[in-house]
Image 1 (tube, helix red, strand yellow):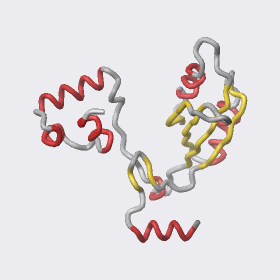
Image 2 (cartoon, helix red, strand yellow):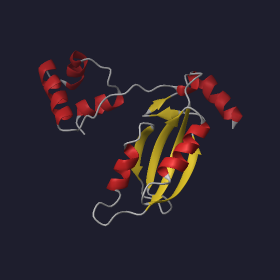
Image 3 (spheres, rainbow, N blue to C red):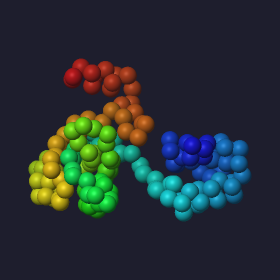
Length: 161
């Protein structure tokens, strides 16, 4: 991966002038490269990471594993696309696992909300033959960003375990 993409993957908040200085390029070159990466589908957007542990109304997140029967012509792609179409699905990954094939990150307002989604939507999709749902209790690190602010927070979390 080139330097510009590495920097943007770590922090997309830098301005074009800051990125130019960091890469040794001109602002025009950086702006053109970013636009080219967007057109090519290399850059698919930018997001802000939210520390949900600090919010009272953050809802819940779950990691759902799906065992599926791949289709002869498209493999796992059709099922992954169907799962990805749901608004509350945040991420979908093809996994190299002996037990499950797809890993799905889901958000919901309550545990019951996610449970209903799994039982009425995911598990009923053609080709889905099994599910396992794991609820996220605490986020320590996401997207390469550590969510605890200092050693005291880290120590306190360790005491809970």
